[in-house]
Structure formats: C-alpha cells, structure tokens
Amino acid sequence: MGVIRKFNEEYGQFSNYAYTVIKGKILNELKHQHKYDIRTEPFDSFILEIKDPFSMHEEAFAIDNILTYTEGLTLNQQRWLIQTYLENKTVTEIAEIYQVTAAAVKSWRKSALNKLRKQLICPL
Image 1 (cartoon, rainbow, N blue to C red):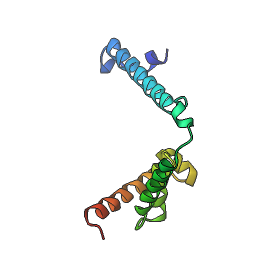
Image 2 (cartoon, rainbow, N blue to C red):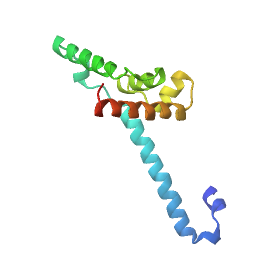
Image 3 (cartoon, rainbow, N blue to C red):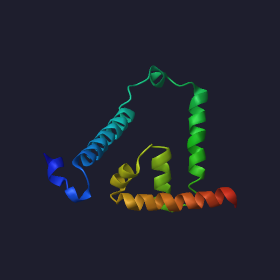
C-alpha cells in the first residue's frame, strides 16, 4: 500500500516505479543478509585448536608491526588504527566506543592513512 501512495504519475508509469522500488528492497535485503552471514559465521574447528608456540610468536610480531605504525599519529588516529586492524572494529563500532560520530572516525582514518602513506614513501 505504501508503494502506491508514494507513486507520482508525473515521473512515469507505475510498473517502472514498482520494479525499481521492489528491486531496491530486494538488493537491500540481500545486503543485510550478507552482512549478517559474515558476522555470524560458525566456528571453524581450526579456530578452536590450540596454537603452537611459533604461530603465537608470529601473531605477536604482527601486533608489534602494527604498533610501529602508530608512531607519529595522534591519539585518535592511533585508536582508529588499533581498533580497525587489531580489534576488527567497524567505523560505527569505533564511534560508539569513543562516543563520537562516525564522521569523526572517518576523519581520523583519512588523516592517519595520509600520514602512513607519507611514512611509507619517505621514511624518516
């Protein structure tokens, strides 16, 4: 019923309008389902296995590696880097953690990436 109320004859035929609206709703549902599927993957038996000492050292090295990139970044830029790459948080989740807007976190990301690119091109 809502589709019919929003339809305006001045913009074309109802069939074209209905097709576009229904296609959009289906694509949105598929997108939401995909996000849900990604976030609710069942545990793999490999994840539950105890790691050997070598892989534990590999992981620590990766963390140390990430932390070396935080040098020269502001506190907020460091927060974005760590939360994104070590904690696998989204922009929205980071914004909730630090009680700021998603736009603020995106600003941290943009400026951090600019600094990191400069560091990689011209290391100090």
